[in-house]
Length: 442
Picture: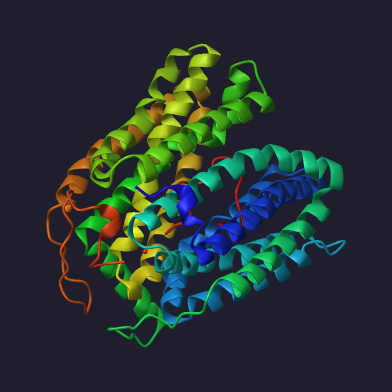
């Protein structure tokens, strides 16, 4: 069993992990800073929402952008993306910039995120092997969750102290620091050998879609990570109204989010490090069902301690996705990893946005936020149960031949999932959507 501390004996992982922490620190400042800056200057919730949406919309181009991660050297791509984002975020601090231009620049900056994520996700399994990769991916996911919760509160306090403009300048500096860390700590690797050199990026993207949806294992995995979180995480968009219905406010909303993140981190430790690999696969569906089922009792309006426990249990169930990230990456052939990741990012982001819209619409009806959250939990549970047969079949049914690639077999549930030797891919765009505020870096 791989321990988290063992991962830091790998030099490149140490630098990739350091770059992640630096990125997360800047992200939490920037996410709050943008909302404060736009709302203070316009007093418009619509424009603030557009700025918020700029973090999600570029990911819809994931299948196309992800193709570049298979065509270009991934280390160089990561460095270029970080430097471009540093320049764009730095431009946001120019005094007197019109809000419309600020939103355009935010969108432009976020366009580099799925490209960066696809490149870094494709590099990580070349740094860590087998169970090391599963544990490393789990540690990254846990770190992201914890940093988001702590950073959301800490970022707000720091912005109150230094102001949103200074916070954006700090975020620009973290992008530059991330690029420097990659230059110093990650070695250059050749572009993956391609058996199907398409002439255009569009052709690459089309083949990437055929590749992912032609493989029953990858297809079943996406059914789970697209549709279960779409409903299970949607309540986060209405946590503040829900907290108000409990006679609380922002502090209580933060406490509920913290309980959910704590549950997720605990579940992720189990699903990526503590439990044996074959058991993780068997628990994917039960955990996915649990993440929605735990929200259903909220319709009974239980007391606050029970509410916190239920959100923690739901968060723990959401950890079903933690090992799937690593397995998806390992499952994909090296030359398709960037495109496979782009497809995954697109579906997760689109589902997340739809889920937030659904939760807001439900909460605005007469049912109120408590019943809306319970209904969303029911939908998440139904999505998990519906996807279960496909997931079960995918463990044993041979995959369809990939485009221009030889036929590959799916590992059985008895194979250690961290040691799938015939294939080798993740979301930092994470498999799990943000649990607090939108992030510019993944």
